[in-house]
Image (tube, rainbow, N blue to C red):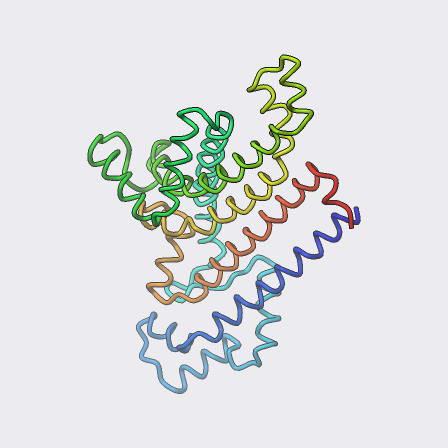
Length: 304
């Protein structure tokens, strides 16, 4: 319980700092939101109309007061109104968040599956090929990988759809593009940890007693390598959620990343603010969840 309370307190503090940074970065951005809203509505801003709208939005209040009001609205689930169409930002984000989480989950399965395949047979041809390919792809920007996959599987083979969320096959190329880079990190770490675990005396003793190599890896060595793999897996999953914006734009995937790019082009500050806050909070919570899984796998972590 002490460990859980300590981790919960640390997570709440990190989320509080995140909210301060998000509010300050968007509030101190150049431009007057009141003028932007009036122009979006087809109204020529005047001094009187801008002053009236600023008073209505509370922009004349001191910055600390505005932050407290904004944070209280966020806690209640109110992320403000869009500058473009004055629609609730919360509804727009929630309608697109499942698509982003589905893409990140599929990419995580790709990364974890490739890492396990390469690590279970580290000296085999398949393991070497997967390791080499993922390391090479990790050094290439994701949009280049996506363009290459589109050229091969869409233009050349005509086997998969190129964009949107038109069916189960539509997630394959975005998930591959996003998951291959994460697979390189997991593969390198898991292979190194498994090599050390296989050299431990109790694992070698089990192999000497006739235990098959695959069972020695899956039953004994993976258990030893699990703590570092959990830590790396949490970081990779957080990176997949945060880095989905490029892949979503490339494949026209209807997630929050594509919503954020559209908001940036239109200077829709509340939507951008909500995107940064939601993705930042998701990253913090995923890392906290990985920390709890690590504590469950390794009791030494729970020690004060």
